[in-house]
Length: 351
Image 1 (cartoon, one colour):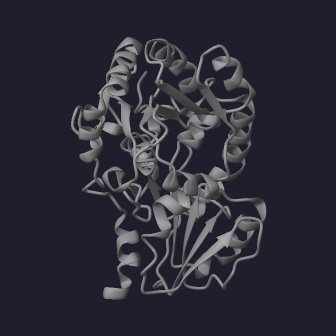
Image 2 (image 1 turned 90 degrees about the vertical axis):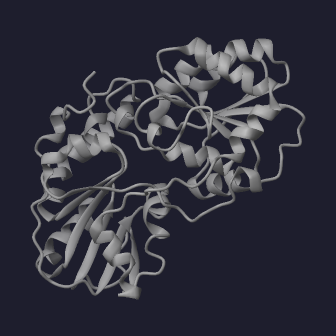
C-alpha cells in the first residue's frame, strides 16, 4: 500500500482563507471533552500572551470573534460553521487541526461501518467549507503532511500534553502478576483482531500474565476463550486520563495493521503507554520510529511478524530486569514539532 498517495476524498481539500488582522485573542473550537485538544493544544496555550477561549461544539461562541485566531479541532457542526463564515472578514487567522486522516476513513473497510458513514457525511458536507476558511492546516504525522502537501500552508504538530510522571517515577504494580494491555478504541478494530494470535501463546506460556483490552461485545467474542483476559468498556476521555495517571500497568502494545487510516496515525500511543508507567512494544516504521529506539526505550517489531511480537512479549513478561531497564530509559520526546503560528501565539507573553 502506498501510504503517501492522497486518498480520493482528500484531493479537493485546500486552505483558501486569507487574513491580515493581528490576533487579539485565540478561540479554540472543540468538543467539550477532546483528547486531541488536551494533548495537542491546552498546555501549549496555557501561557499565551493573549486571551485563550474554548468554544464548545453545540454552544454559542464564548466571545466575539473579531480579530480572533480560530483553531478548529477536527470537527465543526452546521451552526458553528455558519458563525465562522459570517465572521470570516473579521478573523485574524484560521487553523484546522487534524490528528487522523478523516478522509481516508471513508474507504477504509477495516473501520466500523457507522464510523465510515459518519466520516463520509462529515467530510463531504463540510470539508470544502472548512477549506474556504482555513489559512493553514496542522497535521499530526509525517504521512498526513505528505498526503495533504498540496493543500496550502501545511505544518506538523506533535503531541505536547501536560507533563505527567514517567515510568521510573511511578509506583510499581503490586498485583504480583504482569499486566499487558491494549487500549485501542473503535477505530482500532483491525489491531484488536490482529493481537489475538499474538497474546494467545503468551497467556498459554506465562501463567502470571494478565491481558487487558478495551472494547465491547465484539472484543469479548474475539477474546472470550482466552484465559486471564479482561475486556474493559471504553471510558470517557477525562476518566481514562485520570486512570492512566493513577494505575500502574507493566507492558503496553501498539500494533499498527497497515490500513489507509492506520498509516496516518501519530505516535501518541507512546505517551499513552508511558502514562501507565509501562514499557511498550511498537510497530516498526512510522510513526513510532521517531520516538522509540528498539531495546532502549521500548521494543520495535514488524507488523508482519506476529511470532516476533509473541516472543518479545514472553521475554518481557519473564524478565523484570529487562522491563525495568527499558522503562528507565523512557523519556519525553525531543524535537517536538509545532506550527510556526502556534509557536508565535503560545510565546506571545514573552514577546
